[in-house]
Image 1 (spheres, rainbow, N blue to C red):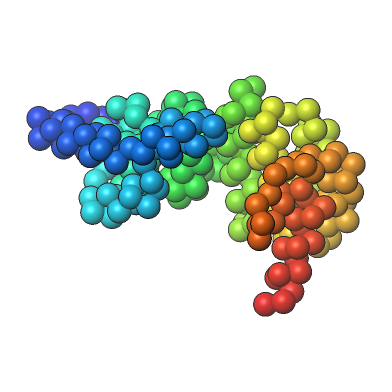
Image 2: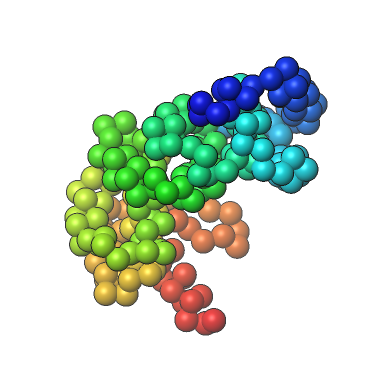
Length: 234
């Protein structure tokens, strides 16, 4: 990680990491671990308890790096909550993303760290073109954030062309990320909504996705009209 974090490593920091790992082990719930493992996350700590630990610790960049280096999923989730996004270089964030194969770590890294980093845009562009579909899914997740919050400079027509051509046969995580982008284009950009719905209906991606009661299906022909309706009702 950062040179600063490496040079400030100390016996006290090592002891703190050990104590936190022991605390996380004590909080691990076998039943929750079994549920999480079905989704690819190898930890059993309640996320509310993880957030409480992070709130207690506050921002500690050096500790965040040390926790990340343990390669423990629960510790990495805490690390992402107590780090400072600007402490990482673009190369460090790229390395962290390629190490973060647990879905929850992957998602929190993108949402809590990369989106707040000054390197977010060049990473987005590079990741979109990466041959690794998991890395590419991060590029699509960042693109979805741009679609929602800062679409200026994005060619939405080109994005729809790519989604239409590639989403149907994409690996699961990449397919999910592309579907999220498709839906957000339809929700936030009325001029593209008709085409978005047509793509969703033709490709039928996530049409049969199991959706709990009172939740909105990620199937774009259902999701987009529901969210647009909610926005109109505000």
